[in-house]
Amino acid sequence: MIFIDACKRKQTPYTPIWMMRQAGRYLSEYKELRKQAGSFLDLCHNVDLATQVTLQPIDILDVDAAIVFSDILVVPLEMGMPLEFLAGEGPKFGRTINTQEDIKNLKDEGYKNLTYVYDTLSQVRSQLSKQKALIGFCGSPWTLATYMIEGEGSKTYARSKKMLYTNPKLLHALLQKLTNELKGYLHMQIKSGVNAVMVFDSWASALQREAYLEFSWNYMKEIAAYVKKNFPQIPVLLFPKGIAGYLDKIDGEFDVFGVDWSTPMELAKQFLGDKYVLQGNLEPSCLYDISAMEKGVDAILSVMGKNGGHIFNLGHGMLPDLPRENAISLVQMVKEKTKR
Ligand code: CP3
Image 1 (cartoon, rainbow, N blue to C red):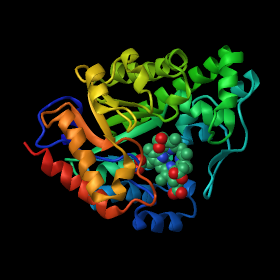
Image 2: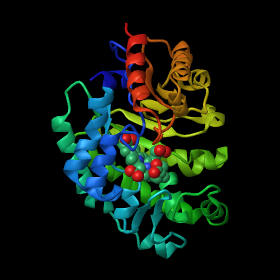
Image 3: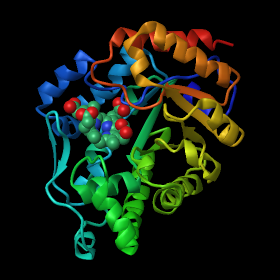
């Protein structure tokens, strides 16, 4: 598998590429199956349809890895937090976490109920070409905690940060509980056939540096170390979004560092390129325009070259209105330009 070889810095015939949020609304085929399922969560729960949606970008884009179709928020859902995805508004929980009691009431080992994810994974793996990797994923404890404390997406993270500064012990208790769940969740995903795992820390940049290291990065490292200890052959990818200013403090036992679009690639290479394979980091909006896209690709390749240590990706997720033709061209372009 080209993607897995690249995670391990082995020689590959070209730089592998996949895209965060490569399954989704920019594909009419996705919208069709979501309609068939009923809602986004129904689609996540439907093993056959989730399998098809996971495989769509492989067939349409010819990317080198599939990422299982699910969401980071199914973990709190199965810990007992009712969840809805409202059209145009994003996720909403039916309750929030404010007290020790609330944390105590969260179900232990809720990840064991995520059988629909595990069944999707084994079905995808059995249908996926041997050349293509299957990536499992979870959200970081901090990013999940923000949704559980706020009850929905937030611009300021005021409630989460209020807890951090007024009752840090309480936040640590929630983060530790989530960390334990996520270790079990990734363990089960690996047992179900994934070839690599990725942790998304989408709201990393909400925290100043010392708070980030204490309340998020430490737990990411704990999860990564757990996977590496139990499954040394499985690559671990960590994606903390928007922390260019903290790169000098990044350490730990993992394989691939996901570089977001706001972090200059040369900076990531300077601080982390010797120790970790770098993944990224094309600004997704470049895909609105084919020449902007090519310029972005050339800029990244001028830093990363084509001799390994790099996995091509966007610097955050695909947007619903990006033209699919440009996504298809991007994959061909990167493969062509990095051919050895
Ligand atoms: O193709 C893939 O990347 C796999 C599937 C995937 C989804 N969500 C499907 C999805 C993955 C890896 C995620 C991760 C996820 N979910 C993150 C971390 C990555 C990131 O983008 O930062 C976060 C923060 C979430 C939470 C979430 N899920 C939000 C805020 C939203 C609403 C915003 C939106 O785009 O509508 C979702 C919904 C969601 N998750 C959709 C998809 C395809 C859109 C649902 C729809 O079909 O309407």
